[in-house]
Length: 268
Ligand SMILES: C[S@@+](CC[C@H](N)C(=O)[O-])C[C@H]1O[C@@H](n2cnc3c(N)ncnc32)[C@H](O)[C@@H]1O
Image (cartoon, rainbow, N blue to C red; front, side, top):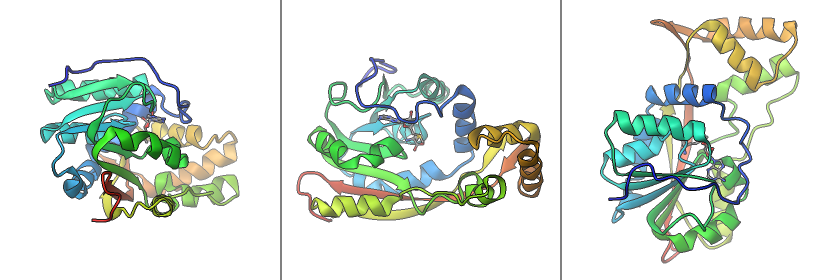
Protein backbone atom coordinates (compact mmCIF):
# COMPACT_ATOMS: atom_id res chain seq x y z
CA UNK A 1 0.00 0.00 0.00
CA UNK A 2 1.51 3.38 -0.91
CA UNK A 3 2.33 5.61 2.03
CA UNK A 4 -0.19 8.37 2.65
CA UNK A 5 0.56 11.95 1.72
CA UNK A 6 3.85 11.64 -0.09
CA UNK A 7 4.67 15.02 -1.64
CA UNK A 8 6.94 15.84 -4.53
CA UNK A 9 7.69 19.03 -6.39
CA UNK A 10 5.52 20.83 -8.92
CA UNK A 11 5.96 19.82 -12.54
CA UNK A 12 6.31 21.58 -15.85
CA UNK A 13 2.83 21.96 -17.45
CA UNK A 14 1.31 25.35 -16.59
CA UNK A 15 -1.44 25.56 -13.96
CA UNK A 16 -3.66 28.08 -15.76
CA UNK A 17 -6.28 28.46 -13.03
CA UNK A 18 -3.60 29.09 -10.43
CA UNK A 19 -5.18 32.37 -9.28
CA UNK A 20 -8.69 31.01 -8.73
CA UNK A 21 -8.10 28.56 -5.85
CA UNK A 22 -7.69 30.74 -2.76
CA UNK A 23 -8.06 29.14 0.69
CA UNK A 24 -11.56 30.63 0.97
CA UNK A 25 -12.72 29.22 -2.38
CA UNK A 26 -11.18 25.81 -1.63
CA UNK A 27 -13.15 25.69 1.63
CA UNK A 28 -16.39 26.75 -0.10
CA UNK A 29 -15.82 24.09 -2.77
CA UNK A 30 -15.30 21.44 -0.08
CA UNK A 31 -18.49 22.55 1.72
CA UNK A 32 -20.44 22.32 -1.55
CA UNK A 33 -19.05 18.85 -2.21
CA UNK A 34 -19.97 17.60 1.26
CA UNK A 35 -23.63 18.24 0.47
CA UNK A 36 -23.46 17.12 -3.16
CA UNK A 37 -24.22 13.76 -4.76
CA UNK A 38 -21.63 14.52 -7.49
CA UNK A 39 -19.05 12.01 -6.14
CA UNK A 40 -21.62 9.22 -5.70
CA UNK A 41 -23.21 9.73 -9.14
CA UNK A 42 -19.85 9.97 -10.88
CA UNK A 43 -18.26 6.94 -9.22
CA UNK A 44 -21.40 4.94 -10.00
CA UNK A 45 -21.09 5.89 -13.68
CA UNK A 46 -17.39 4.94 -13.56
CA UNK A 47 -18.18 1.39 -12.40
CA UNK A 48 -17.61 -0.30 -15.80
CA UNK A 49 -14.41 1.72 -16.31
CA UNK A 50 -13.11 0.54 -12.94
CA UNK A 51 -13.47 -3.16 -13.75
CA UNK A 52 -10.13 -4.90 -13.27
CA UNK A 53 -8.49 -1.77 -11.80
CA UNK A 54 -6.83 -1.51 -8.40
CA UNK A 55 -4.68 1.62 -8.84
CA UNK A 56 -6.03 5.03 -9.86
CA UNK A 57 -4.29 8.30 -10.67
CA UNK A 58 -6.67 11.23 -10.06
CA UNK A 59 -5.16 14.12 -12.06
CA UNK A 60 -6.20 17.49 -10.60
CA UNK A 61 -7.77 15.81 -7.57
CA UNK A 62 -8.75 19.13 -5.98
CA UNK A 63 -10.11 18.64 -2.48
CA UNK A 64 -10.61 14.94 -3.25
CA UNK A 65 -14.23 14.73 -4.44
CA UNK A 66 -13.53 11.50 -6.30
CA UNK A 67 -10.28 10.46 -4.61
CA UNK A 68 -11.94 10.07 -1.21
CA UNK A 69 -14.89 8.01 -2.44
CA UNK A 70 -12.65 5.79 -4.59
CA UNK A 71 -10.29 5.27 -1.64
CA UNK A 72 -13.29 4.38 0.57
CA UNK A 73 -14.09 1.68 -1.98
CA UNK A 74 -10.61 0.20 -1.52
CA UNK A 75 -8.75 1.48 -4.58
CA UNK A 76 -5.14 2.62 -4.23
CA UNK A 77 -5.35 6.25 -5.30
CA UNK A 78 -2.66 8.74 -6.23
CA UNK A 79 -4.02 12.28 -6.00
CA UNK A 80 -2.04 14.70 -8.20
CA UNK A 81 -2.84 18.31 -7.33
CA UNK A 82 -0.78 21.49 -7.70
CA UNK A 83 -2.55 23.79 -5.23
CA UNK A 84 -1.45 23.52 -1.57
CA UNK A 85 -4.84 24.85 -0.36
CA UNK A 86 -6.66 22.06 -2.19
CA UNK A 87 -4.19 19.45 -0.95
CA UNK A 88 -4.66 20.76 2.61
CA UNK A 89 -8.43 20.21 2.40
CA UNK A 90 -7.85 16.78 0.83
CA UNK A 91 -5.43 15.72 3.57
CA UNK A 92 -7.90 16.83 6.28
CA UNK A 93 -10.55 14.72 4.59
CA UNK A 94 -8.25 11.67 4.45
CA UNK A 95 -7.59 12.03 8.18
CA UNK A 96 -11.32 12.49 8.99
CA UNK A 97 -12.13 9.36 6.98
CA UNK A 98 -9.12 7.40 8.32
CA UNK A 99 -7.91 6.56 4.82
CA UNK A 100 -4.30 5.48 4.34
CA UNK A 101 -4.57 4.22 0.75
CA UNK A 102 -4.09 7.63 -0.90
CA UNK A 103 -0.76 9.09 -2.00
CA UNK A 104 -0.86 12.87 -2.42
CA UNK A 105 1.54 14.31 -5.00
CA UNK A 106 1.84 18.07 -5.32
CA UNK A 107 2.26 19.20 -8.91
CA UNK A 108 0.66 19.77 -12.28
CA UNK A 109 0.43 16.91 -14.79
CA UNK A 110 3.95 15.88 -15.74
CA UNK A 111 5.04 12.47 -16.97
CA UNK A 112 8.25 12.83 -14.96
CA UNK A 113 6.38 12.69 -11.64
CA UNK A 114 3.70 10.11 -12.33
CA UNK A 115 4.04 6.32 -12.51
CA UNK A 116 1.76 3.90 -14.44
CA UNK A 117 -1.71 3.27 -12.92
CA UNK A 118 -4.59 1.01 -14.00
CA UNK A 119 -6.94 3.97 -14.44
CA UNK A 120 -6.02 7.58 -15.13
CA UNK A 121 -8.89 9.91 -14.24
CA UNK A 122 -9.23 13.61 -15.08
CA UNK A 123 -12.32 15.29 -13.64
CA UNK A 124 -13.11 18.95 -14.25
CA UNK A 125 -9.55 20.07 -15.00
CA UNK A 126 -10.15 22.77 -17.64
CA UNK A 127 -6.47 23.38 -18.54
CA UNK A 128 -6.11 19.71 -19.50
CA UNK A 129 -9.37 19.61 -21.49
CA UNK A 130 -8.26 22.79 -23.31
CA UNK A 131 -5.12 21.00 -24.53
CA UNK A 132 -6.41 17.43 -24.60
CA UNK A 133 -4.55 15.64 -27.39
CA UNK A 134 -1.00 16.35 -26.12
CA UNK A 135 -2.18 15.21 -22.68
CA UNK A 136 -3.54 11.95 -24.12
CA UNK A 137 -0.30 11.26 -25.97
CA UNK A 138 1.51 11.49 -22.63
CA UNK A 139 -1.12 9.78 -20.50
CA UNK A 140 -1.99 6.70 -22.59
CA UNK A 141 1.35 4.93 -22.06
CA UNK A 142 0.89 5.43 -18.31
CA UNK A 143 -2.66 4.03 -18.19
CA UNK A 144 -2.51 0.24 -17.89
CA UNK A 145 -6.21 -0.30 -18.63
CA UNK A 146 -8.45 2.74 -18.78
CA UNK A 147 -8.59 6.50 -19.25
CA UNK A 148 -11.60 8.38 -17.87
CA UNK A 149 -12.62 12.04 -18.18
CA UNK A 150 -15.38 13.85 -16.31
CA UNK A 151 -16.48 17.12 -17.91
CA UNK A 152 -19.30 19.64 -17.78
CA UNK A 153 -22.36 19.24 -19.99
CA UNK A 154 -23.62 22.38 -21.75
CA UNK A 155 -22.11 25.89 -21.68
CA UNK A 156 -22.19 26.21 -17.88
CA UNK A 157 -24.95 28.87 -17.63
CA UNK A 158 -26.17 27.30 -14.39
CA UNK A 159 -22.77 27.63 -12.67
CA UNK A 160 -23.16 30.34 -10.02
CA UNK A 161 -26.14 31.59 -12.08
CA UNK A 162 -23.69 33.11 -14.58
CA UNK A 163 -26.16 32.73 -17.45
CA UNK A 164 -28.49 35.17 -15.68
CA UNK A 165 -25.94 37.31 -13.85
CA UNK A 166 -23.70 38.21 -16.78
CA UNK A 167 -26.43 40.12 -18.69
CA UNK A 168 -27.83 41.58 -15.47
CA UNK A 169 -24.57 42.82 -13.97
CA UNK A 170 -22.06 43.01 -16.80
CA UNK A 171 -24.41 43.85 -19.68
CA UNK A 172 -23.15 40.96 -21.84
CA UNK A 173 -24.00 37.30 -22.30
CA UNK A 174 -22.09 34.66 -20.38
CA UNK A 175 -19.49 33.44 -22.89
CA UNK A 176 -19.99 29.78 -21.96
CA UNK A 177 -17.32 27.14 -22.18
CA UNK A 178 -16.59 24.06 -24.22
CA UNK A 179 -18.10 20.86 -22.91
CA UNK A 180 -17.76 17.10 -23.24
CA UNK A 181 -18.99 17.13 -26.85
CA UNK A 182 -15.79 18.83 -27.99
CA UNK A 183 -13.85 16.15 -26.11
CA UNK A 184 -15.84 13.30 -27.73
CA UNK A 185 -15.19 14.87 -31.14
CA UNK A 186 -11.47 15.16 -30.49
CA UNK A 187 -11.30 11.57 -29.26
CA UNK A 188 -13.25 10.38 -32.31
CA UNK A 189 -10.86 12.25 -34.63
CA UNK A 190 -7.97 10.15 -33.31
CA UNK A 191 -9.84 6.85 -33.44
CA UNK A 192 -10.96 6.67 -29.82
CA UNK A 193 -14.67 5.76 -29.61
CA UNK A 194 -15.34 6.41 -25.95
CA UNK A 195 -18.34 5.48 -23.82
CA UNK A 196 -20.19 8.45 -22.32
CA UNK A 197 -22.80 8.70 -19.60
CA UNK A 198 -24.43 11.92 -18.42
CA UNK A 199 -24.89 12.27 -14.66
CA UNK A 200 -27.10 14.85 -12.99
CA UNK A 201 -26.56 16.00 -9.41
CA UNK A 202 -27.11 18.76 -6.87
CA UNK A 203 -24.23 21.14 -6.32
CA UNK A 204 -25.64 23.62 -3.79
CA UNK A 205 -23.19 26.22 -2.55
CA UNK A 206 -23.34 26.98 1.19
CA UNK A 207 -22.20 30.34 2.62
CA UNK A 208 -21.59 31.34 6.24
CA UNK A 209 -23.71 34.48 5.83
CA UNK A 210 -25.58 36.52 3.22
CA UNK A 211 -22.80 39.19 3.01
CA UNK A 212 -20.31 36.34 2.57
CA UNK A 213 -22.27 35.18 -0.50
CA UNK A 214 -22.44 38.71 -1.91
CA UNK A 215 -18.68 39.09 -1.48
CA UNK A 216 -18.09 35.75 -3.21
CA UNK A 217 -19.96 36.87 -6.36
CA UNK A 218 -18.36 40.33 -6.25
CA UNK A 219 -14.95 38.66 -6.28
CA UNK A 220 -15.53 35.99 -8.93
CA UNK A 221 -17.33 38.41 -11.27
CA UNK A 222 -15.02 41.35 -10.43
CA UNK A 223 -17.95 43.69 -9.61
CA UNK A 224 -16.99 47.09 -8.30
CA UNK A 225 -19.87 49.55 -8.69
CA UNK A 226 -22.64 50.21 -6.13
CA UNK A 227 -25.25 49.62 -8.87
CA UNK A 228 -23.83 46.15 -9.62
CA UNK A 229 -23.88 45.31 -5.91
CA UNK A 230 -27.47 46.52 -5.52
CA UNK A 231 -28.64 44.35 -8.45
CA UNK A 232 -26.63 41.39 -7.18
CA UNK A 233 -28.15 41.63 -3.69
CA UNK A 234 -31.68 41.82 -5.15
CA UNK A 235 -30.96 38.77 -7.34
CA UNK A 236 -29.48 36.72 -4.49
CA UNK A 237 -32.38 37.62 -2.17
CA UNK A 238 -34.58 35.78 -4.66
CA UNK A 239 -32.28 32.76 -4.93
CA UNK A 240 -30.49 32.03 -1.67
CA UNK A 241 -32.23 29.93 0.96
CA UNK A 242 -31.66 30.08 4.70
CA UNK A 243 -30.86 26.60 6.05
CA UNK A 244 -29.99 26.50 9.77
CA UNK A 245 -27.20 29.03 10.34
CA UNK A 246 -26.09 28.99 6.69
CA UNK A 247 -27.24 30.42 3.37
CA UNK A 248 -27.48 28.03 0.44
CA UNK A 249 -27.35 28.81 -3.28
CA UNK A 250 -29.27 25.87 -4.81
CA UNK A 251 -27.81 24.61 -8.07
CA UNK A 252 -28.21 21.54 -10.26
CA UNK A 253 -25.48 20.50 -12.63
CA UNK A 254 -24.65 17.79 -15.13
CA UNK A 255 -21.40 16.13 -16.12
CA UNK A 256 -20.39 13.57 -18.70
CA UNK A 257 -18.38 10.55 -17.59
CA UNK A 258 -16.30 9.56 -20.63
CA UNK A 259 -14.02 6.52 -20.66
CA UNK A 260 -12.28 3.98 -22.84
CA UNK A 261 -9.87 1.08 -22.57
CA UNK A 262 -6.44 2.16 -23.77
CA UNK A 263 -5.16 -1.16 -25.04
CA UNK A 264 -7.41 -1.56 -28.08
CA UNK A 265 -8.77 1.97 -28.72
CA UNK A 266 -12.05 0.19 -29.63
CA UNK A 267 -15.45 1.17 -28.34
CA UNK A 268 -16.91 -1.29 -25.87
C1 LIG B 1 -12.31 22.28 -10.64
S1 LIG B 1 -11.08 21.46 -9.72
C2 LIG B 1 -11.66 19.78 -9.88
C3 LIG B 1 -11.19 18.90 -8.77
C4 LIG B 1 -11.71 17.45 -8.82
N1 LIG B 1 -11.11 16.71 -9.91
C5 LIG B 1 -13.21 17.43 -8.91
O1 LIG B 1 -13.75 17.02 -9.93
O2 LIG B 1 -13.84 17.85 -7.94
C6 LIG B 1 -9.68 21.45 -10.83
C7 LIG B 1 -8.39 21.11 -10.13
O3 LIG B 1 -7.38 20.83 -11.09
C8 LIG B 1 -6.15 21.39 -10.66
N2 LIG B 1 -5.32 21.60 -11.86
C9 LIG B 1 -5.36 22.64 -12.72
N3 LIG B 1 -4.46 22.46 -13.72
C10 LIG B 1 -3.86 21.27 -13.49
C11 LIG B 1 -2.84 20.51 -14.17
N4 LIG B 1 -2.26 20.97 -15.30
N5 LIG B 1 -2.45 19.33 -13.65
C12 LIG B 1 -3.03 18.86 -12.51
N6 LIG B 1 -4.00 19.53 -11.82
C13 LIG B 1 -4.40 20.71 -12.31
C14 LIG B 1 -6.57 22.66 -9.93
O4 LIG B 1 -5.58 23.07 -9.00
C15 LIG B 1 -7.87 22.25 -9.27
O5 LIG B 1 -7.68 21.79 -7.96
